Image (cartoon, rainbow, N blue to C red):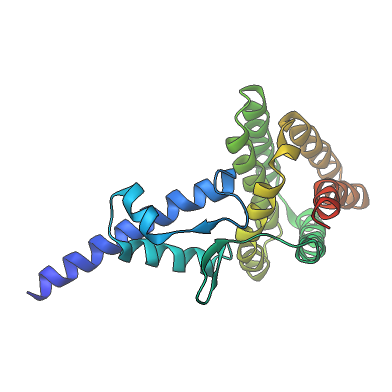
Length: 221
């Protein structure tokens, strides 16, 4: 009996994880829009599961900041305000500018080579016009830049805001339509870092991050 209960618990956990992944992808792609209400019953019917894993999946997404639960009203996809976007911009700038400075203190040629491989992936996505993959490749490149700093706490802090970063991207996905620009900007950053031009690299990462954020902030006001 105990084994049966454990099996059912594991199966439900697996189902809720799959549901969370499905909803996360739709939110990040913008097919479920910011501010939209998520109906448990409708989702259960659409996905062919009970309401329990739906509820657990929504709780997981709430923990990631992708949705918010409003008592007596329901669960809604988070819509980032202009104020929150500004906070996110300031925080991201501080982290990534620090990461560039730290990375240049000890980054190896192999690390620069891997960074270039990630930029190549962005370029390949641009050529195939795969916007979703381009966004993933862009974020992977920034995560690796953080990792190059060699500071575990910095990495943990950065990952804690990835949910909101993806929400920002979902709200401003049209700014990613020319993914080739992303590759160009990252290559310029890489060149400055390889040349040991710290201040140039810091300025380039700041310009890259600020460009899209400022437009998003203005549009949200």
